[in-house]
Length: 55
Image (cartoon, rainbow, N blue to C red; front, side):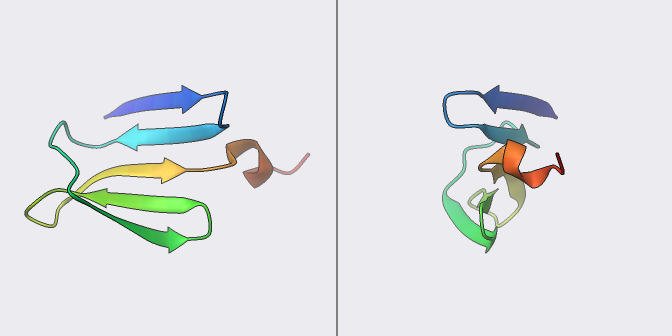
């Protein structure tokens, strides 16, 4: 598992596998799940990450 934070978009990508994503589905507002050709979850993209935390 690898974590990638992109400050320019305030997004976090959680890479669960090195397989190529061929399908993406929005699971909730700002949360996108990436799947490989076999339908296995390979990554999770969380947009507007800092808005997810209480200040």
